[in-house]
Length: 254
Image (cartoon, rainbow, N blue to C red; front, side, top):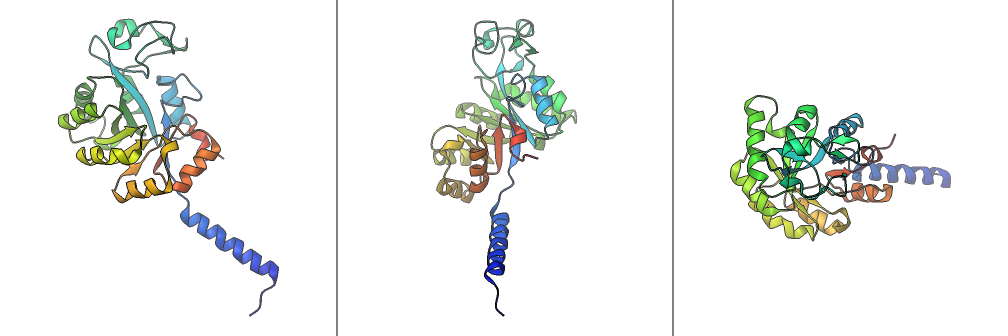
């Protein structure tokens, strides 16, 4: 049977489309610090916005304040995001609750964020400050014991691998992801040591070769912080498992 040039071209395009669909990845969408591109980061309002945008998960950062509570904030110091000064770890919760992020939203506790999400999406808790591992493990255990959450509703990450080791020593119930801004292959040994499920690298460090190697080690890949359309598409082409982004609606635009 002979085909016209037009028919051959249409068949070629159909096959190309099928191949593209077969190779395309459908990564999970993780809102960075809630929906940082829309609302003051690491606040309840930002978390709610991310949920409205249909995320699969939300990433937040925690510090241990001077009075012993875990508070959700990214920077060690207050100057960049608030009109206050000093180190957040040096303040009590009473003082922190008088401060607003970008002049609008209060700084929440981890308890408040857990209660708002209530297991509706997965929460990635990044241990930003020192001495956060053990109190975070204890707090999560309380939520599990009360039936408010299950271990599948959360996972822990950190650039501070010592904190990850402390968390792993405190509990084996909760999944761990290893954060890195260096060569992601260098994070494989610590990931194996901690029985981690994922490596969370700087998206710019990823290549077809190291993605393949990480996946061969049975580790998922959750790159941060991917905001531009070209970078989002590259992550999908590479086959990452999730995309951490300030703009969740950009991952699968309508």
